Image (cartoon, rainbow, N blue to C red; front, side):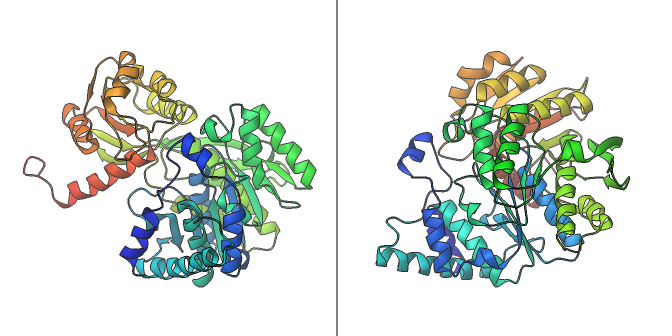
Length: 450
């Protein structure tokens, strides 16, 4: 297959789960991905890796760790989800999106294996979209000679398709409420699903803060003989400055008194914690024989890029895109507003998926916004903007419905003065829609914007 044919075949599988009802029809489990990986000669076993789960921060932590590994001179693979504009973003090799040619070549191998397994009756049904993309990443990394891979869990951990890897280090970031219909309705239940990535004897880095989650992770590590390193116990952190919403800190190892500068060029104080988590994982890898120095850790943190997460697009007015989609993320965004935009008007563009806690998120964000424009991502499972208005408009000082996300974004920018701020948030799918629009906007400005 060529690239266009490969993408069409994958998109025909339906992307990520659309609803809890679909989840009940689609049986979660590792059977399909295990069979498919075996048919591909288990490419995931040919590359050492780190496996990262969590509610928030796992993608950022994965991106930071991959940047550190590249700074250390390793040829890297990075697997994350979802993508914002192009499916290739999910599979990055040595810092660049996989090429169309390599994507098509890997999918052709995966597709041929699926067809063979279906014909032989070993597979009862076609693997899901996410299972196929995961297998594609395994194959692509092995074929391209990646020296080290970083895998971000898609959903949960225990039954996620990535969970057939045996990592050098497992990482669990913050744990909070999200995807409750899939993962459980208590922090302990959700933590149990995330802790499902822990393997016997494999060191674990945890930045979970909730006591219930920490207890579950510690118990699982004890059961499997896995060394647990909690970042709060392993380091003493002192903030050293802030510029344009990007924070700096120094982490000190209390045992050795060595220091690591944490200077991620990513807005938001929470990225200090993500950088610290990635640095802790990198240090454990160094203990396991990988040539990663503290200097490489610092350089990798400074060089990281992670689009769509508090990404600033403009200055006057300040324009940001952020993939916040759960209450914990909304609390961090609200904190960012209070620390960096106190006294300034905020125009909020908001759109979300139907399975999200929109009432709680709106309750956090809308009262602090000067004006809210309700829209909807270009996805079948997006909640309609008029319904969103019925549910949440009473929480806003003022609001309108603009269903097309690009029009909503443009309206917010037009309404804002140079001293104001525009934030678009609620879903990574909305962020992807608006990033694509923004890039087209820059490439072909209208006369009114020239």
